[in-house]
Image 1: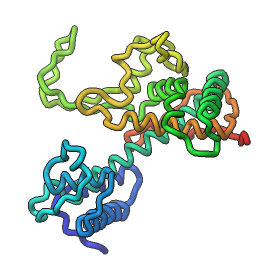
Image 2: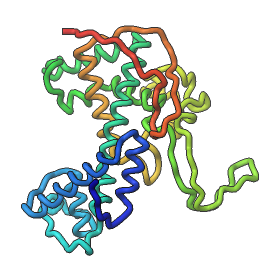
Image 3: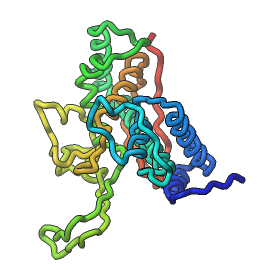
Length: 299
């Protein structure tokens, strides 16, 4: 048995979160150990990397992140442990959350998009044709690397990702706290200040009042020439001060995954069938029977 003297309860929060996601405690301590050893190595050797952990190290030692881009990635002198602005546990917790938020949501968006394309052959053909044309236009091969410019050129794929995140938001709900007393319009109900609120994104995104024919997969609803939806009701990445800071990266990652799949595989058509979800401790949409799609190599 390994005993750790933890200065804060942050690692316990991380442990509980990992437990809800089906992970075991050893993973929690392994992650903490990796973060601790990496920070110690960088501070002792003066190693600087242009990554999230380096920003955490700067915040840990100085209490802030520099606004000066020239100083942003410079080595930061370590301070005494009792003067640190962030504990190792807090950095480990935030690193894990960034990892989960960036991987699980991207994987889910990619999977749900492929599933929907399999049920809508005409949309699949249009998306696949666009990918092929963009690769040819930019002189790229299906098995090779993609470029940022080529991905940005895939406008219809953008619409597909938008429609997927509407129908299957990465997080099906938002949790917020009331900052002041609020009376619900046309009712006598008042929500007191400091009350926790859960907002159903899944419910809003599938409300025909905001999105006509919400059960249908129609990427064209987001096209500039149609705009067949209420923009204020579209919140797949949250809204307000706690809006997802990695929205553009998340969309880009999903487009890269989809482009590689569409460029190298044919998706077998299948009958339309709505996805059934099951209750799960993880704050994501979990299909009852998974998502089964047939693929075959194109080349």
